[in-house]
Length: 589
Image (cartoon, one colour):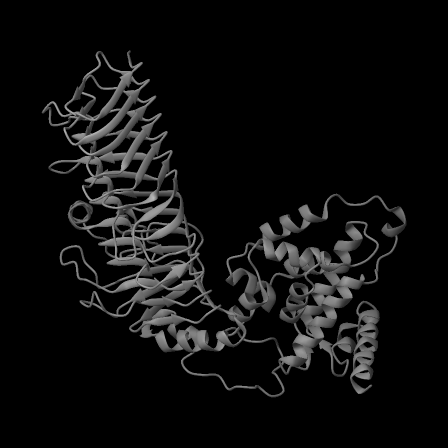
């Protein structure tokens, strides 16, 4: 009964407040006991009314409150949104798009003060609750914003969600911000030193501060948001289960080290087998970060531990630039399932991404490894390495993508340039890889694809683009003698000054269907485009565009089908196999 009476009193209070919002002068309104609105909050309500009238709507709804917040533009709420990288102008456009065209309601035009719709009433009730829960005796713009997010069915919440805004992200960005004009009655926990603003210039170690906030966020599966700045890490971070560490990352960039949220990694120098810089727990994520190793140089490349390591279910890495890690992302040392890696850019110096020990579908999307991400000067005053030396190192030492055991990996739109090996499929004690590889590319490599082991279910490689060069013996595809699985190339293109398109051994099955072979035999040694000496080979409906030997079949070749291909000038196929070989319907163009 007491609880019900309390709720009834709160509703009566709220109705009274909303009734007199536009009728009582501001000085009197600010004195309403127990629930006063700050000056900026009242401005939001005023603008919300004006927007509803302008749009010829019957009442004030959540979308009008959000428009009022945007137009006010200076309060804690607006600054929090901007701190999360939200453009208020773009948000306004999205809200108005969702609202649609103004209505034609002449009777509304004459009314200058409108009532609040039920959803808007709910927003303001939530705002009162948020303020009281935080111990404030006023309702600020930030509390109205929380109210909008909690009223999930309103246009305001949907518009904010389309920009990735949640209550957790707002709470995280508000932690280091000053509060509204009044102080809370009784702060639950005194401020802890150092504060975020003290750590954003990279001069002091921020490891403990960030970890403390991550541990606090773990209590309700929350998010820790780091404002734009440079955060020095001398130790390691562990992201608890269900927690996200996020920052500001406006889009793919070539090591903009003075923009957005930058983590400066100092720990682990010379300790390749040491603990990773960031450890992901099941269900955790990092998003919107740039990670840079300030003490790494191309003249004296030093080993460091993995930058990111995950294990368990659902490790998530999104919107991240790994400027110059020694080893980038390890989702393989620990058993894992359903990892999700998206929008990752950088210049790893030994291994970019390592996948292994995965027993259920992982996904990798939009990943680009290129020396430009470290070498290209963005005018931020941070020294860059010599580009020639960097490429020399990568061609000698580095591998972009390494896959061990992973069951039905989905890889989409990935690319690397200048690496010794672009895509390396290895055998581990857990097994080999099978998966779907769509729109992948490797340029300027020694070897674009190397398969030492694949699972029987196969590597399905479609719409790939592969170039090998800048090596003593550049070969685009190598399938090793220990492979017994299937490797299928469909609708792929191969070009550049390579010696050969493919060298194939082992007992597995390799196929090329509707592929374009543009260039090979760069050394002019009469080398064939495809040299196969083991397993089963299919070459069908492909276009050999260079007047050189196309295919050689060795005496260990078990079987081959070479069918329906187009050859330049003449058909040149050398067959030394005693196995079942079918050659036919090939033409000269």
